[in-house]
Length: 207
Image 1 (cartoon, rainbow, N blue to C red):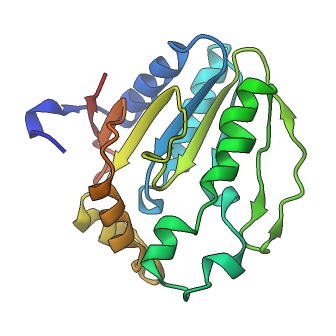
Image 2 (spheres, rainbow, N blue to C red):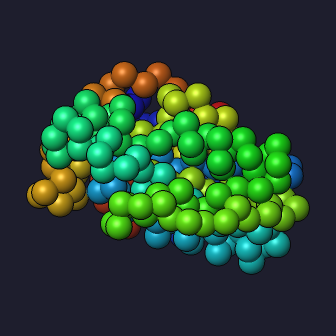
């Protein structure tokens, strides 16, 4: 994580402005990762950034990794709380790459949802045409280190204590998987955010 002095305290609005600025700096279509465990609740931040971008004339949409889970028969093949499965089988990163990250650039279309996690069936979504200057904010856990060609990467980091505290009890079995994955990944995000206390984030710019 680096030294404490490398992180600059900011506010929630300041974080939104900073991520928005990074998105606006990308010419044309931009695919942006907000890598975050579920305990960090990244969707409200993504929604605020999306609104900010739209106010500044950039079309923006949010894609949740939880709409790109694999079918339950694969997720739960080794049990409902297998941490290796969570790291390697739970989310369909290949489909995300094919249907969102690459497709929005090569075909100027993208698929908002692949799988309905609650109903455990195809989401039956149609592909959406990308607007000029389209920004897609992809949110979810363990996005870094997957060879996904993001234009900007933001990581919301929770220390182990905060991760345990902010993860619902029935999902705490995922915490060892998240910690192990974080230890294995060497990719540095463009913006690393200390997010133990979302009202008081602190940011380190990687590049």
